[in-house]
Image (cartoon, rainbow, N blue to C red; front, side, top):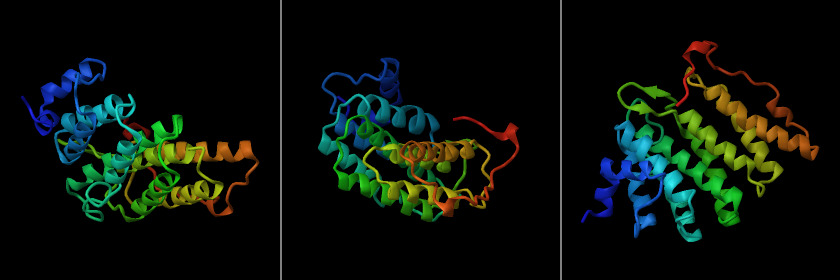
Length: 240
């Protein structure tokens, strides 16, 4: 019988979960499997990292309610730590970017579940927001698609996490303004962004401003002047 770690790296086993509509086999320890799958974010095998590990974590484990409130909080704390979201932070042009980038997606998945049915403590939600803001200021590797290894898509994955975070009903106007101001700074990164990162960032701004408009809140003056470095080459845009 396979151990959880062996199952987490067995692509045939993982494919069987996907083919079964993201239903876990009976008696699977969902929390142990979730923790084991996180380690696969370091893999340069695109199928194992992206199509299997991430998708099973998000769709088969987190979204389908296999984790307790305490386990959800534990996973959130884990992906926000130095071995995941901040793994080798500041380095560029190496494979550590995959761990950081895909950790953003798990933050998004956890916050999405919390938005539907609040389960995370207020302190955990605030910690997630603050940590995403800090991470955005320290990340230096904004690559999109990496030949032979698949999507890193760091900016897009960060935008997804910020988007879900910003829409959470428990966030304050101040929280959302902080995220808007971060978007202004992200729009000025010097790395050319070719893979629809501009659209993902714009979506975050759209959702925040929609909330402000519905609430009669003014757009922060500090966010009016944006100088994006996005590519105008529409043929270069790709969707993951």
